[in-house]
Length: 139
Length: 139
Image 1 (spheres, rainbow over the protein chains, first blue to last red):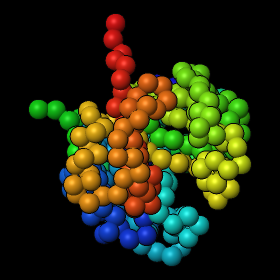
Image 2: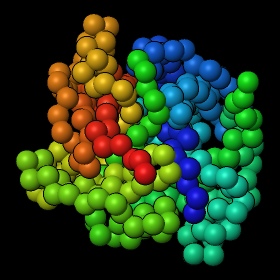
Image 3: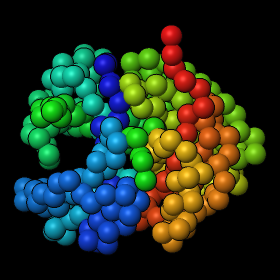
């Protein structure tokens, strides 16, 4: 499946500003990206943590998927995202194995990546994302 | 804090054998390590996923911490572990910043690493582990 490593974990938080402050201390540096995704009712804040990243997810609307997750669980790990060379190739491989997908094609995610989600059943109840960075860190 | 990346995520599962089968498909390879930790009442199964790892955690006793977590949440992401150069140095830095620790000294973890846990309050309710690999992958 050519998983290259864990690109990031997504953490749902009730208070995004308090969480940004806490993770700035935990990681030792401020966030590198902050983005409102109106369509999903979500604010996403990304930290670099060495070769991986940490994404904080706050809800902007009571009917968002993150709001429902937070109501059930409070602050908690929400998903794990694996880096892959080619999201579409990986999706096709998983589909051919009979795994359920939430996305059949990659879409543009936060901070310049192509992303797609597998159905939680593929990860034993854990929401799993595939992530293909578009920007290269060079120079 | 010198976080090098996400070493692994820990996933608590009700049925370790079903989860091993599912993650062998998801990751594309069988586990690299399987270990019973009697003191914790836990069976830990580790997969390599590129530069990171995935650890499945099954409970062996109704009074284990994993059993209590599973009763509350069912199968779910349990903790995130960051790779660091020196667990003790990182613990001392976090303590000096006023973050709460569960371990004040590193201890031997699964699959040959020194590990220590921060109190969930340090990660906004998310259990956070520090992990210092002892074995080098060379040759």
